[in-house]
Amino acid sequence: MAQKPAPSETIFRNVRVLDALKGELGAATDVVVRGNRIAAIGPSAKAAPGAKVIDGKGRTLMPGLIDVHVHFGFGSLLLTQLYDPDTTPEKLGAAMAKSAGQMLLRGFTAARDMGGPIFPLKRAIDAGKTPGPRIWPSGAVISQTSGHGDFRAPNERSRRFFGKPSRAEEYGATFIADGRDEVLTATRENLRMGASQIKLMAGGGTSSDYDPIDVTQYTLDEMKAAVEAADDWNTYVAVHAYTPRAVRRAIEAGVKCIEHGQLLDEPTIELMAQRGVWLSAQNLIPDSPNMTPERRRKRAGILEGNARIWPMAKKHGVKLAWGTDILFEPDLNSQQNNLILALRQWFTPAEILKLVTYDNAQLLALSGPRSPYEGKLGIVEEGALADLILVNGDPLANLDLIASPAKNFSVIMKDGVVYKDAR
Image (cartoon, rainbow, N blue to C red):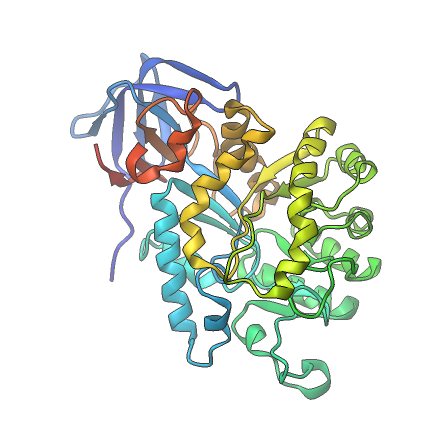
């Protein structure tokens, strides 16, 4: 059985530290990592005998990238494969592990999984049995019957009326929960398993069969049930929602984070800013040949909303986070870094680098004591967790560098352990 790599002492010599918060690149300096923390920066950065020495040669040392909306389960296989009876939990788990390892080598040292059978993979990564990013798990998505998380095949009948859970429920991908009591149970079950936040479906989606985009899902009382249960565990609920009506109901219920939101109007964005509600947004990829005609039709308005939501949220000072949300198209996972570049329409390179490191880390921290890892992420400073990338160049001057991690990320460290050293 593979053992978890032991963090040792490492000194990065002659590196220029990227201050993601200020958007500045510092003068050449040394950085000492001791265990899984940044121990010293600057004149006090002295290496102990036997420490690993990494000569940065003037390269940039920056925080690891963070993606706050991934689905390791739904993003590692095609939809046809997920519905295939021959796809066992073991096959799905192997595909997820492969995807996680590739994500780490793209420089993503942390990710928030926003629904699916994630707990076995997270345990394997944390135990050092397979490489991958830190994972903030939501557990199974929670959906009403006919909601965005109702993944039943046409021949699968309601568990409530016919007594048999659907295949997706048995896999831990979803809880189909109706009424306050079932929502409470589903939320608490995820928390029992180790969820760091709860994912609830509050409106229609593009990748589900039963719910048009315009529908609002869950009554106020049902949604409040999830919020109350999460709040009792000192964490929060995030909801999938596009429309003003769905988002306003979620805000009334006490939800702290909206996922997507491409159909929002300006008054609702202003309300989010006033209430301090996060917007975890994505600049979604265009349609692909693998998408069904129905999914393409449902995505049309969502894709158009990309160009509105980012500048509008920025204008009103909404707390913004960024994620990819790649579903059922594993070949597109390799574009994860490229998707960051699409933000240049609305943000400067400094703003983008802050968004995908420091800002995303603040959203992860919203899990409070339910966060699976103690320590600061998204910044290179003494005492912070040692999730670091050594970049061949200055990403503030040339943001394109982060889109080619195989070429431009010479060292990738997570939790004080070097997973890539290609100097």
